[in-house]
Image 1 (cartoon, rainbow, N blue to C red):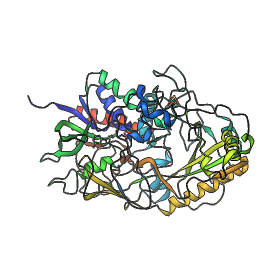
Image 2: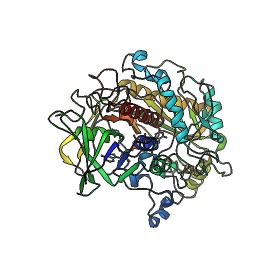
Image 3: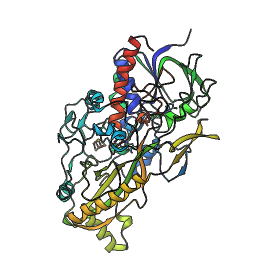
Image 4: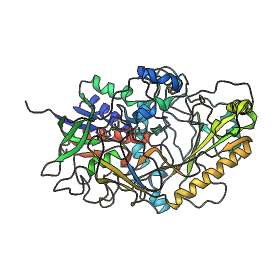
Length: 531
Ligand SMILES: Cc1cc2nc3c(=O)[nH]c(=O)nc-3n(C[C@H](O)[C@H](O)[C@H](O)COP(=O)(O)OP(=O)(O)OC[C@H]3O[C@@H](n4cnc5c(N)ncnc54)[C@H](O)[C@@H]3O)c2cc1C
Ligand code: SF4
Protein backbone atom coordinates (compact mmCIF):
# COMPACT_ATOMS: atom_id res chain seq x y z
CA UNK A 1 0.00 0.00 0.00
CA UNK A 2 1.47 3.44 -0.86
CA UNK A 3 2.32 5.63 2.15
CA UNK A 4 -0.35 8.13 3.19
CA UNK A 5 0.20 11.63 1.87
CA UNK A 6 -1.02 14.37 4.21
CA UNK A 7 -2.12 17.89 3.36
CA UNK A 8 0.26 19.26 5.97
CA UNK A 9 3.12 17.85 8.05
CA UNK A 10 3.76 19.92 11.19
CA UNK A 11 7.05 19.36 13.05
CA UNK A 12 7.02 20.29 16.76
CA UNK A 13 4.02 20.36 19.11
CA UNK A 14 4.67 23.53 21.18
CA UNK A 15 2.87 26.87 21.05
CA UNK A 16 3.50 27.14 17.35
CA UNK A 17 3.07 23.57 16.04
CA UNK A 18 0.36 22.52 18.51
CA UNK A 19 -1.82 25.54 17.66
CA UNK A 20 -1.21 25.20 13.92
CA UNK A 21 -1.88 21.45 13.77
CA UNK A 22 -5.02 21.73 15.93
CA UNK A 23 -6.43 24.58 13.84
CA UNK A 24 -5.69 22.98 10.45
CA UNK A 25 -7.21 19.63 11.44
CA UNK A 26 -10.35 21.24 12.85
CA UNK A 27 -10.78 23.03 9.54
CA UNK A 28 -10.61 19.83 7.53
CA UNK A 29 -6.95 19.46 6.47
CA UNK A 30 -5.30 16.08 7.01
CA UNK A 31 -2.32 16.69 9.29
CA UNK A 32 0.60 14.67 10.61
CA UNK A 33 2.20 16.13 13.76
CA UNK A 34 5.73 14.97 14.50
CA UNK A 35 7.08 15.43 18.03
CA UNK A 36 10.38 14.15 19.37
CA UNK A 37 9.54 14.37 23.09
CA UNK A 38 7.58 12.18 25.54
CA UNK A 39 4.03 12.90 26.78
CA UNK A 40 3.72 14.65 30.15
CA UNK A 41 0.18 13.98 31.43
CA UNK A 42 -0.91 16.49 34.09
CA UNK A 43 -1.96 13.77 36.56
CA UNK A 44 1.69 12.67 36.73
CA UNK A 45 2.85 16.17 37.63
CA UNK A 46 3.39 16.69 41.33
CA UNK A 47 4.83 20.14 41.42
CA UNK A 48 3.33 20.88 44.87
CA UNK A 49 5.77 18.58 46.67
CA UNK A 50 9.12 19.57 48.16
CA UNK A 51 12.08 18.41 46.09
CA UNK A 52 12.78 15.49 48.48
CA UNK A 53 9.21 14.25 48.07
CA UNK A 54 9.28 14.24 44.31
CA UNK A 55 11.65 11.46 43.34
CA UNK A 56 9.53 8.43 44.27
CA UNK A 57 6.66 9.79 42.19
CA UNK A 58 8.88 10.31 39.18
CA UNK A 59 7.83 13.91 39.12
CA UNK A 60 9.01 16.01 36.22
CA UNK A 61 10.23 19.44 37.25
CA UNK A 62 11.11 21.70 34.36
CA UNK A 63 14.62 20.35 33.94
CA UNK A 64 13.34 16.82 33.24
CA UNK A 65 12.13 18.03 29.86
CA UNK A 66 15.04 20.29 29.00
CA UNK A 67 17.18 18.93 26.19
CA UNK A 68 20.37 17.62 27.74
CA UNK A 69 22.22 17.04 24.50
CA UNK A 70 25.21 19.28 23.84
CA UNK A 71 25.09 22.76 22.38
CA UNK A 72 28.17 24.94 22.00
CA UNK A 73 28.15 28.68 22.64
CA UNK A 74 30.95 30.86 21.25
CA UNK A 75 31.12 34.48 22.41
CA UNK A 76 29.14 35.98 25.28
CA UNK A 77 27.73 33.45 27.77
CA UNK A 78 24.01 33.01 27.06
CA UNK A 79 21.83 29.98 27.53
CA UNK A 80 19.49 28.33 25.03
CA UNK A 81 16.79 26.42 26.90
CA UNK A 82 15.30 23.79 24.58
CA UNK A 83 12.46 21.55 25.75
CA UNK A 84 11.67 18.15 24.29
CA UNK A 85 8.22 17.12 25.44
CA UNK A 86 4.76 16.74 23.92
CA UNK A 87 3.33 20.28 24.13
CA UNK A 88 6.81 21.79 23.90
CA UNK A 89 7.67 24.58 26.29
CA UNK A 90 3.98 25.35 26.94
CA UNK A 91 4.31 22.43 29.39
CA UNK A 92 6.64 24.54 31.52
CA UNK A 93 6.09 28.16 30.68
CA UNK A 94 5.09 31.10 32.81
CA UNK A 95 2.36 32.09 30.31
CA UNK A 96 2.91 35.87 30.20
CA UNK A 97 1.03 36.82 27.01
CA UNK A 98 1.70 40.32 25.66
CA UNK A 99 0.78 41.81 22.29
CA UNK A 100 3.46 43.68 20.37
CA UNK A 101 2.57 47.32 19.69
CA UNK A 102 2.19 48.90 16.22
CA UNK A 103 5.68 50.47 16.58
CA UNK A 104 7.21 47.08 17.42
CA UNK A 105 6.61 46.04 13.79
CA UNK A 106 8.52 49.02 12.36
CA UNK A 107 11.66 49.34 14.41
CA UNK A 108 13.73 49.76 11.23
CA UNK A 109 11.84 52.93 10.26
CA UNK A 110 11.88 54.22 13.81
CA UNK A 111 15.49 53.55 14.80
CA UNK A 112 17.34 52.81 11.55
CA UNK A 113 19.27 49.88 13.03
CA UNK A 114 17.13 46.88 12.10
CA UNK A 115 14.42 46.14 9.51
CA UNK A 116 10.66 46.55 9.57
CA UNK A 117 8.47 43.48 9.66
CA UNK A 118 6.70 42.75 6.37
CA UNK A 119 3.39 42.85 8.27
CA UNK A 120 1.76 45.51 10.42
CA UNK A 121 0.06 45.31 13.79
CA UNK A 122 -3.33 45.74 12.09
CA UNK A 123 -2.71 42.67 9.93
CA UNK A 124 -1.92 40.53 12.96
CA UNK A 125 -4.55 42.01 15.31
CA UNK A 126 -7.41 39.60 14.35
CA UNK A 127 -5.05 36.69 15.00
CA UNK A 128 -4.04 38.14 18.37
CA UNK A 129 -7.78 38.11 19.19
CA UNK A 130 -8.05 34.49 18.08
CA UNK A 131 -4.88 33.44 19.92
CA UNK A 132 -6.08 35.06 23.14
CA UNK A 133 -9.40 33.22 22.92
CA UNK A 134 -7.63 29.91 22.31
CA UNK A 135 -5.10 30.47 25.09
CA UNK A 136 -7.55 32.14 27.55
CA UNK A 137 -5.65 35.25 28.67
CA UNK A 138 -6.40 37.12 31.88
CA UNK A 139 -5.68 40.84 32.12
CA UNK A 140 -7.10 44.32 32.34
CA UNK A 141 -7.83 46.93 29.67
CA UNK A 142 -5.32 49.75 30.14
CA UNK A 143 -5.46 51.68 26.85
CA UNK A 144 -1.69 51.87 26.45
CA UNK A 145 -0.14 52.40 22.97
CA UNK A 146 2.96 50.50 24.01
CA UNK A 147 0.98 47.40 25.08
CA UNK A 148 -2.30 47.02 23.18
CA UNK A 149 -5.30 45.57 25.02
CA UNK A 150 -6.80 42.24 23.98
CA UNK A 151 -9.53 39.69 24.68
CA UNK A 152 -9.12 39.30 28.41
CA UNK A 153 -10.83 37.41 31.20
CA UNK A 154 -10.73 38.57 34.84
CA UNK A 155 -7.30 39.97 35.81
CA UNK A 156 -5.21 38.64 38.67
CA UNK A 157 -5.29 40.64 41.90
CA UNK A 158 -2.21 42.52 43.02
CA UNK A 159 -0.58 41.28 46.21
CA UNK A 160 0.79 43.40 49.06
CA UNK A 161 4.30 43.84 47.65
CA UNK A 162 2.85 44.70 44.24
CA UNK A 163 0.71 47.49 45.71
CA UNK A 164 3.83 48.92 47.36
CA UNK A 165 5.80 48.69 44.12
CA UNK A 166 2.94 50.27 42.20
CA UNK A 167 3.03 53.35 44.41
CA UNK A 168 6.83 53.57 44.19
CA UNK A 169 7.06 53.12 40.40
CA UNK A 170 4.29 55.68 39.80
CA UNK A 171 6.68 58.35 41.15
CA UNK A 172 8.79 57.73 38.03
CA UNK A 173 5.84 57.86 35.64
CA UNK A 174 5.48 54.07 35.31
CA UNK A 175 2.20 52.18 35.23
CA UNK A 176 2.19 48.94 37.21
CA UNK A 177 -0.71 46.86 35.85
CA UNK A 178 -2.09 43.33 36.38
CA UNK A 179 0.00 40.87 34.38
CA UNK A 180 -1.48 39.34 31.22
CA UNK A 181 -1.23 35.56 31.35
CA UNK A 182 -2.67 32.59 29.44
CA UNK A 183 -4.26 31.18 32.55
CA UNK A 184 -7.84 30.52 33.67
CA UNK A 185 -8.25 33.05 36.49
CA UNK A 186 -11.94 32.18 36.89
CA UNK A 187 -14.23 29.23 36.13
CA UNK A 188 -16.16 28.90 32.89
CA UNK A 189 -13.46 28.75 30.24
CA UNK A 190 -13.46 25.05 29.47
CA UNK A 191 -10.68 24.21 31.90
CA UNK A 192 -10.02 24.00 35.61
CA UNK A 193 -9.31 27.37 37.06
CA UNK A 194 -6.04 28.24 38.70
CA UNK A 195 -5.68 27.45 42.43
CA UNK A 196 -2.70 29.81 42.76
CA UNK A 197 -0.03 27.35 43.83
CA UNK A 198 2.80 29.16 42.02
CA UNK A 199 4.36 26.17 40.25
CA UNK A 200 3.47 26.89 36.62
CA UNK A 201 7.01 26.50 35.28
CA UNK A 202 7.23 22.99 36.74
CA UNK A 203 4.02 22.03 34.98
CA UNK A 204 0.41 22.67 35.95
CA UNK A 205 -1.23 19.60 37.53
CA UNK A 206 -4.74 20.82 36.64
CA UNK A 207 -3.94 22.36 33.22
CA UNK A 208 -5.23 25.79 34.18
CA UNK A 209 -2.40 27.28 32.17
CA UNK A 210 -2.44 27.11 28.36
CA UNK A 211 -0.68 23.98 27.15
CA UNK A 212 -1.06 22.87 23.53
CA UNK A 213 -1.01 19.21 24.63
CA UNK A 214 -4.28 19.87 26.51
CA UNK A 215 -5.92 22.83 24.83
CA UNK A 216 -5.13 22.73 21.10
CA UNK A 217 -3.97 19.29 19.95
CA UNK A 218 -6.83 17.16 21.46
CA UNK A 219 -9.35 19.33 19.56
CA UNK A 220 -7.49 18.49 16.35
CA UNK A 221 -7.40 14.79 17.21
CA UNK A 222 -11.15 14.84 17.93
CA UNK A 223 -11.75 16.01 14.35
CA UNK A 224 -10.32 12.69 13.12
CA UNK A 225 -7.93 14.56 10.79
CA UNK A 226 -4.84 14.72 12.99
CA UNK A 227 -2.34 11.85 13.26
CA UNK A 228 0.45 12.10 15.81
CA UNK A 229 3.93 10.64 15.45
CA UNK A 230 5.17 11.16 18.99
CA UNK A 231 8.68 9.96 19.93
CA UNK A 232 10.08 10.61 16.45
CA UNK A 233 12.68 13.23 15.54
CA UNK A 234 12.66 14.82 12.09
CA UNK A 235 16.23 14.59 10.81
CA UNK A 236 15.99 15.92 7.29
CA UNK A 237 13.57 17.37 4.75
CA UNK A 238 13.91 15.74 1.34
CA UNK A 239 13.24 17.78 -1.80
CA UNK A 240 12.27 16.94 -5.37
CA UNK A 241 13.66 18.37 -8.62
CA UNK A 242 11.34 21.38 -8.41
CA UNK A 243 12.68 22.59 -5.06
CA UNK A 244 9.60 21.35 -3.20
CA UNK A 245 9.80 19.25 -0.05
CA UNK A 246 8.37 15.79 -0.72
CA UNK A 247 8.92 14.14 2.67
CA UNK A 248 10.41 14.39 6.13
CA UNK A 249 12.86 11.68 7.14
CA UNK A 250 12.10 10.80 10.76
CA UNK A 251 14.02 8.61 13.21
CA UNK A 252 12.85 7.21 16.58
CA UNK A 253 14.09 9.47 19.39
CA UNK A 254 17.30 7.88 20.72
CA UNK A 255 16.63 4.94 18.39
CA UNK A 256 17.47 3.78 14.91
CA UNK A 257 14.10 2.92 13.31
CA UNK A 258 13.46 5.21 10.32
CA UNK A 259 10.40 6.32 8.38
CA UNK A 260 9.28 9.05 5.99
CA UNK A 261 6.23 11.32 6.21
CA UNK A 262 4.86 12.66 2.93
CA UNK A 263 2.78 15.82 2.64
CA UNK A 264 1.93 18.69 0.30
CA UNK A 265 3.05 21.29 2.82
CA UNK A 266 5.61 21.24 5.67
CA UNK A 267 5.52 23.56 8.68
CA UNK A 268 8.58 23.88 10.92
CA UNK A 269 7.66 24.64 14.52
CA UNK A 270 10.64 23.16 16.36
CA UNK A 271 11.41 26.24 18.48
CA UNK A 272 14.60 28.16 19.25
CA UNK A 273 17.66 26.69 17.46
CA UNK A 274 15.91 23.49 16.34
CA UNK A 275 14.14 24.76 13.21
CA UNK A 276 17.33 26.26 11.69
CA UNK A 277 19.20 23.10 12.69
CA UNK A 278 16.75 21.01 10.67
CA UNK A 279 17.01 23.34 7.66
CA UNK A 280 20.81 23.44 7.78
CA UNK A 281 20.89 19.65 8.08
CA UNK A 282 18.74 19.25 4.92
CA UNK A 283 21.35 19.65 2.19
CA UNK A 284 20.95 18.72 -1.48
CA UNK A 285 22.49 19.62 -4.82
CA UNK A 286 19.92 22.40 -5.18
CA UNK A 287 20.47 23.64 -1.61
CA UNK A 288 24.12 22.91 -0.76
CA UNK A 289 24.06 25.27 2.29
CA UNK A 290 20.88 23.80 3.72
CA UNK A 291 17.25 24.01 2.72
CA UNK A 292 15.92 27.48 1.77
CA UNK A 293 19.40 28.84 2.46
CA UNK A 294 20.86 29.86 -0.88
CA UNK A 295 20.63 33.44 0.41
CA UNK A 296 22.70 32.50 3.52
CA UNK A 297 20.12 33.81 5.97
CA UNK A 298 19.10 30.58 7.77
CA UNK A 299 20.45 30.55 11.34
CA UNK A 300 21.38 34.26 11.27
CA UNK A 301 19.93 37.16 13.31
CA UNK A 302 19.65 35.07 16.48
CA UNK A 303 18.36 37.25 19.30
CA UNK A 304 16.19 37.03 22.43
CA UNK A 305 15.78 39.00 25.64
CA UNK A 306 18.39 40.53 27.90
CA UNK A 307 17.50 40.18 31.56
CA UNK A 308 18.50 41.84 34.83
CA UNK A 309 16.81 40.76 38.04
CA UNK A 310 16.92 42.82 41.21
CA UNK A 311 15.61 41.41 44.49
CA UNK A 312 14.36 43.75 47.21
CA UNK A 313 12.89 43.01 50.65
CA UNK A 314 10.33 45.69 51.32
CA UNK A 315 10.74 47.39 54.69
CA UNK A 316 6.99 47.61 55.29
CA UNK A 317 6.67 43.82 55.15
CA UNK A 318 9.78 42.72 57.08
CA UNK A 319 8.88 40.63 60.12
CA UNK A 320 5.11 40.72 59.60
CA UNK A 321 3.13 37.62 60.56
CA UNK A 322 3.59 35.06 57.72
CA UNK A 323 0.71 35.17 55.25
CA UNK A 324 -0.11 33.26 52.11
CA UNK A 325 1.41 35.02 49.12
CA UNK A 326 1.24 32.08 46.74
CA UNK A 327 -0.24 33.03 43.42
CA UNK A 328 0.17 32.28 39.74
CA UNK A 329 3.84 33.31 40.10
CA UNK A 330 3.77 36.95 38.89
CA UNK A 331 0.56 38.98 39.16
CA UNK A 332 1.87 42.36 38.02
CA UNK A 333 3.81 43.91 35.16
CA UNK A 334 5.41 47.28 34.47
CA UNK A 335 5.14 47.89 30.72
CA UNK A 336 7.87 49.77 28.89
CA UNK A 337 7.88 53.42 30.05
CA UNK A 338 9.28 56.75 28.93
CA UNK A 339 12.78 57.16 30.38
CA UNK A 340 12.82 59.71 33.18
CA UNK A 341 16.47 60.60 32.56
CA UNK A 342 18.70 60.60 29.46
CA UNK A 343 19.40 57.11 28.07
CA UNK A 344 21.76 55.94 25.35
CA UNK A 345 19.76 53.09 23.82
CA UNK A 346 16.80 52.54 21.51
CA UNK A 347 13.90 50.24 22.33
CA UNK A 348 13.18 49.59 25.97
CA UNK A 349 12.26 47.10 28.62
CA UNK A 350 9.44 46.11 30.95
CA UNK A 351 9.58 44.64 34.45
CA UNK A 352 8.08 41.26 35.29
CA UNK A 353 7.46 41.25 39.02
CA UNK A 354 7.79 38.44 41.57
CA UNK A 355 8.63 35.77 39.01
CA UNK A 356 9.60 33.12 41.54
CA UNK A 357 7.47 30.90 43.74
CA UNK A 358 7.18 31.91 47.42
CA UNK A 359 7.68 28.25 48.40
CA UNK A 360 11.44 28.65 48.87
CA UNK A 361 13.40 31.29 50.82
CA UNK A 362 15.12 32.62 47.69
CA UNK A 363 17.23 35.05 49.69
CA UNK A 364 18.67 32.54 52.21
CA UNK A 365 21.89 31.91 50.30
CA UNK A 366 22.57 35.63 50.02
CA UNK A 367 22.39 36.27 53.77
CA UNK A 368 25.55 36.10 55.82
CA UNK A 369 25.69 34.35 59.19
CA UNK A 370 24.54 31.04 60.63
CA UNK A 371 22.54 29.44 63.43
CA UNK A 372 19.43 30.77 65.16
CA UNK A 373 20.10 34.44 64.27
CA UNK A 374 20.48 33.61 60.60
CA UNK A 375 17.28 31.53 60.56
CA UNK A 376 15.41 34.39 62.24
CA UNK A 377 16.66 36.81 59.57
CA UNK A 378 15.58 34.44 56.78
CA UNK A 379 12.09 34.14 58.32
CA UNK A 380 11.67 37.86 58.87
CA UNK A 381 12.63 38.71 55.33
CA UNK A 382 10.48 36.02 53.68
CA UNK A 383 7.15 37.97 53.66
CA UNK A 384 9.00 41.05 52.35
CA UNK A 385 10.52 39.31 49.33
CA UNK A 386 10.01 40.83 45.86
CA UNK A 387 11.73 40.78 42.46
CA UNK A 388 11.88 43.29 39.63
CA UNK A 389 12.99 41.38 36.53
CA UNK A 390 13.77 43.61 33.56
CA UNK A 391 13.21 42.00 30.13
CA UNK A 392 14.77 44.10 27.40
CA UNK A 393 14.95 44.29 23.65
CA UNK A 394 18.00 42.77 21.94
CA UNK A 395 19.17 44.01 18.52
CA UNK A 396 18.92 41.48 15.66
CA UNK A 397 22.51 41.27 14.34
CA UNK A 398 23.44 39.26 11.26
CA UNK A 399 26.67 37.92 12.83
CA UNK A 400 24.76 36.33 15.73
CA UNK A 401 23.83 32.94 14.46
CA UNK A 402 23.55 29.19 14.83
CA UNK A 403 25.62 26.84 12.68
CA UNK A 404 26.16 23.07 12.78
CA UNK A 405 29.24 21.45 14.23
CA UNK A 406 31.11 19.86 11.30
CA UNK A 407 31.81 16.57 13.09
CA UNK A 408 30.11 16.32 16.51
CA UNK A 409 26.71 14.60 16.68
CA UNK A 410 24.25 14.36 19.59
CA UNK A 411 22.58 11.25 21.02
CA UNK A 412 20.00 11.39 18.22
CA UNK A 413 22.65 11.47 15.52
CA UNK A 414 21.91 15.13 14.72
CA UNK A 415 24.76 17.65 14.35
CA UNK A 416 25.49 19.62 17.53
CA UNK A 417 24.28 23.25 17.19
CA UNK A 418 26.96 25.93 17.58
CA UNK A 419 25.73 29.35 18.71
CA UNK A 420 27.78 32.46 17.95
CA UNK A 421 26.61 35.44 19.98
CA UNK A 422 27.77 38.89 21.11
CA UNK A 423 25.65 41.51 22.85
CA UNK A 424 25.19 44.82 21.01
CA UNK A 425 26.18 48.01 22.87
CA UNK A 426 22.46 48.91 22.83
CA UNK A 427 21.62 45.67 24.67
CA UNK A 428 24.23 46.31 27.37
CA UNK A 429 23.15 49.92 27.84
CA UNK A 430 19.67 48.62 28.62
CA UNK A 431 21.02 46.03 31.04
CA UNK A 432 22.72 48.74 33.10
CA UNK A 433 19.66 50.97 32.97
CA UNK A 434 17.36 48.15 34.16
CA UNK A 435 19.51 47.66 37.25
CA UNK A 436 19.69 51.38 37.99
CA UNK A 437 15.95 51.92 37.57
CA UNK A 438 15.12 48.87 39.73
CA UNK A 439 17.27 50.33 42.51
CA UNK A 440 15.46 53.69 42.12
CA UNK A 441 12.10 51.96 42.56
CA UNK A 442 13.33 50.05 45.58
CA UNK A 443 14.81 53.17 47.13
CA UNK A 444 11.45 54.87 46.71
CA UNK A 445 9.59 51.83 48.11
CA UNK A 446 12.00 51.36 51.03
CA UNK A 447 13.97 48.12 51.30
CA UNK A 448 15.71 46.32 54.15
CA UNK A 449 17.91 44.09 51.99
CA UNK A 450 18.49 43.92 48.26
CA UNK A 451 20.77 42.22 45.74
CA UNK A 452 21.22 41.61 42.02
CA UNK A 453 21.09 37.89 41.18
CA UNK A 454 22.53 38.75 37.73
CA UNK A 455 25.86 40.56 37.97
CA UNK A 456 26.34 39.92 34.24
CA UNK A 457 23.66 40.14 31.52
CA UNK A 458 21.51 37.05 31.17
CA UNK A 459 20.02 35.84 27.89
CA UNK A 460 17.56 34.76 26.64
CA UNK A 461 14.91 33.38 29.08
CA UNK A 462 14.09 30.70 26.51
CA UNK A 463 12.86 33.49 24.20
CA UNK A 464 15.15 32.82 21.21
CA UNK A 465 13.93 34.31 17.92
CA UNK A 466 14.98 35.40 14.45
CA UNK A 467 16.88 32.55 12.79
CA UNK A 468 14.53 32.11 9.81
CA UNK A 469 13.17 35.59 9.70
CA UNK A 470 10.36 37.11 7.72
CA UNK A 471 11.16 40.09 5.55
CA UNK A 472 10.31 42.18 2.55
CA UNK A 473 13.54 41.29 0.74
CA UNK A 474 14.50 37.68 -0.22
CA UNK A 475 18.17 38.68 -0.05
CA UNK A 476 18.00 39.48 3.67
CA UNK A 477 15.28 37.16 4.92
CA UNK A 478 14.20 33.51 4.75
CA UNK A 479 10.42 33.94 4.77
CA UNK A 480 7.94 36.20 3.02
CA UNK A 481 5.06 37.93 4.81
CA UNK A 482 3.08 34.67 4.91
CA UNK A 483 5.75 32.78 6.92
CA UNK A 484 6.48 30.95 3.67
CA UNK A 485 10.07 30.32 2.53
CA UNK A 486 11.07 32.47 -0.45
CA UNK A 487 13.08 29.60 -1.92
CA UNK A 488 10.79 26.63 -1.12
CA UNK A 489 7.14 27.19 -1.83
CA UNK A 490 5.73 24.40 0.34
CA UNK A 491 7.81 25.26 3.44
CA UNK A 492 6.48 27.45 6.29
CA UNK A 493 8.23 28.36 9.57
CA UNK A 494 5.92 29.68 12.28
CA UNK A 495 7.96 29.61 15.48
CA UNK A 496 9.89 32.56 16.93
CA UNK A 497 12.54 32.00 14.26
CA UNK A 498 10.23 33.91 11.93
CA UNK A 499 10.43 37.19 13.93
CA UNK A 500 12.07 40.05 12.03
CA UNK A 501 12.81 42.00 15.21
CA UNK A 502 11.86 41.49 18.85
CA UNK A 503 10.68 44.09 21.34
CA UNK A 504 10.76 43.61 25.10
CA UNK A 505 7.50 41.62 25.16
CA UNK A 506 7.38 37.84 25.71
CA UNK A 507 7.13 36.00 22.38
CA UNK A 508 4.54 33.25 22.69
CA UNK A 509 1.30 35.14 22.05
CA UNK A 510 2.84 36.48 18.81
CA UNK A 511 4.12 32.99 17.87
CA UNK A 512 0.61 31.59 18.35
CA UNK A 513 -1.01 34.44 16.41
CA UNK A 514 1.43 33.86 13.53
CA UNK A 515 0.69 30.11 13.60
CA UNK A 516 -3.07 30.74 13.39
CA UNK A 517 -2.53 33.23 10.56
CA UNK A 518 -0.37 30.66 8.76
CA UNK A 519 -3.22 28.12 9.03
CA UNK A 520 -5.41 30.58 7.10
CA UNK A 521 -2.66 31.22 4.52
CA UNK A 522 -2.03 27.50 3.93
CA UNK A 523 -5.73 26.72 3.54
CA UNK A 524 -6.29 29.66 1.19
CA UNK A 525 -3.20 28.87 -0.90
CA UNK A 526 -4.26 25.24 -1.15
CA UNK A 527 -7.72 26.29 -2.23
CA UNK A 528 -6.14 28.47 -4.95
CA UNK A 529 -4.02 25.43 -5.89
CA UNK A 530 -0.81 27.34 -5.23
CA UNK A 531 0.57 24.62 -2.96
C1 LIG B 1 10.53 28.07 32.01
C2 LIG B 1 9.99 28.82 30.82
C3 LIG B 1 9.15 29.93 31.02
C4 LIG B 1 8.63 30.62 29.92
N1 LIG B 1 7.77 31.66 30.14
C5 LIG B 1 7.25 32.32 29.08
C6 LIG B 1 6.31 33.38 29.28
O1 LIG B 1 5.93 33.71 30.40
N2 LIG B 1 5.81 34.01 28.18
C7 LIG B 1 6.21 33.69 26.92
O2 LIG B 1 5.73 34.31 25.96
N3 LIG B 1 7.09 32.69 26.72
C8 LIG B 1 7.61 32.00 27.76
N4 LIG B 1 8.49 30.98 27.54
C9 LIG B 1 8.85 30.64 26.16
C10 LIG B 1 7.75 29.83 25.52
O3 LIG B 1 7.57 28.64 26.21
C11 LIG B 1 8.12 29.60 24.07
O4 LIG B 1 8.22 30.86 23.42
C12 LIG B 1 7.09 28.83 23.29
O5 LIG B 1 6.64 27.69 23.96
C13 LIG B 1 7.70 28.47 21.95
O6 LIG B 1 6.84 27.66 21.23
P1 LIG B 1 7.40 26.89 19.97
O7 LIG B 1 6.27 26.07 19.46
O8 LIG B 1 8.03 27.83 19.04
O9 LIG B 1 8.58 25.98 20.52
P2 LIG B 1 8.58 24.78 21.65
O10 LIG B 1 7.51 25.10 22.61
O11 LIG B 1 9.96 24.69 22.09
O12 LIG B 1 8.14 23.54 20.80
C14 LIG B 1 8.99 22.94 19.87
C15 LIG B 1 8.75 21.44 19.89
O13 LIG B 1 9.42 20.86 18.79
C16 LIG B 1 10.00 19.63 19.17
N5 LIG B 1 11.12 19.38 18.25
C17 LIG B 1 12.23 20.13 18.10
N6 LIG B 1 12.99 19.65 17.10
C18 LIG B 1 12.33 18.57 16.63
C19 LIG B 1 12.61 17.64 15.57
N7 LIG B 1 13.71 17.75 14.82
N8 LIG B 1 11.71 16.63 15.36
C20 LIG B 1 10.59 16.52 16.13
N9 LIG B 1 10.29 17.37 17.13
C21 LIG B 1 11.14 18.38 17.35
C22 LIG B 1 10.42 19.86 20.61
O14 LIG B 1 10.49 18.62 21.29
C23 LIG B 1 9.30 20.75 21.13
O15 LIG B 1 8.28 20.02 21.73
C24 LIG B 1 9.00 30.23 28.61
C25 LIG B 1 9.83 29.13 28.41
C26 LIG B 1 10.32 28.42 29.50
C27 LIG B 1 11.18 27.21 29.27
S1 SF4 C 1 -0.49 28.68 39.78
FE1 SF4 C 1 -2.33 28.09 38.67
S2 SF4 C 1 -1.67 27.81 36.52
FE2 SF4 C 1 0.18 27.82 37.84
S3 SF4 C 1 0.56 25.65 38.30
FE3 SF4 C 1 -0.69 26.45 39.99
S4 SF4 C 1 -2.82 26.01 39.37
FE4 SF4 C 1 -1.54 25.81 37.54
